[in-house]
Image: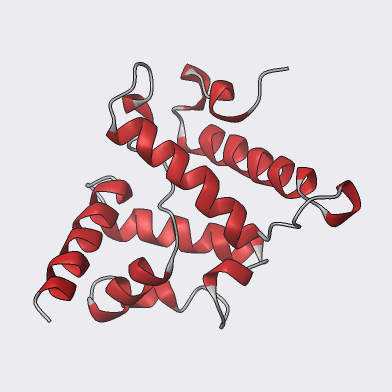
Length: 146
């Protein structure tokens, strides 16, 4: 059985197919880490971060066969991204789609999906990963100005 990033293939370059692959991988990661399996019990928020950062590194590193997923990859949600989205008028509304509380405790797959879809819509025609990278870099420059 092929799992994880190895499970990505040409058939997942369509957004709907990618989203299904992503959802299945997050579910497997959460189940594999469930306390009943002597795991840590990753939340959806933590699982999305693991999956999305892995894809981001593979795409950004231009690993063979991964650059094709740039247009459909999800952005990794974290404190830095949420802060940057909230201060940019174009993207502020996307933050409101997530439940209150820490991103790492997020457990609502519908809110997560709505966030990714809305960000994709607002970022268009740019891939959301490029918007995330730009916002992250701006946050780093701002924190170095202090």
